[in-house]
Image 1 (cartoon, rainbow, N blue to C red):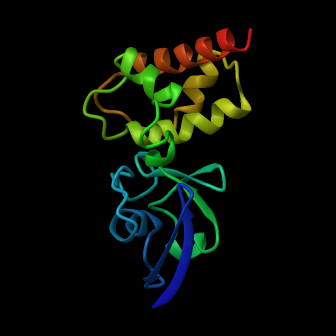
Image 2 (tube, rainbow, N blue to C red):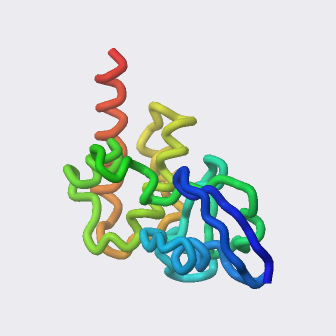
Length: 159
């Protein structure tokens, strides 16, 4: 067993892990943050995506010990607990961009850093950014519309 310490959504988490413990398992079972979903366990579906030091990573492909001393952000950290929804979350709600919701956390954790780097992407660029996230329910139209709605809100607020 190895002791690791990770900052998750601004809170310090320490725990004993076996060297083979996946980051997704540490987040869900030791930190108690179940918004991160585990789907394929092969890094293909994107449901387990979290942000490590601001960059999206597949937590099912990463060992917990690799995150030792680093900063994680999960879906629970996208907006303050008692605060308003993040604009992406609000747009997903308004554009009906989710159905079962299993993939939603991973999509949001992937697209949020993408929009930080690409504030005005084309639809083709949005589709490319979403290529690593599988959704079996929505057909992606609502997801793309939600991302475009978020972009429109940001452009309006910056005017």
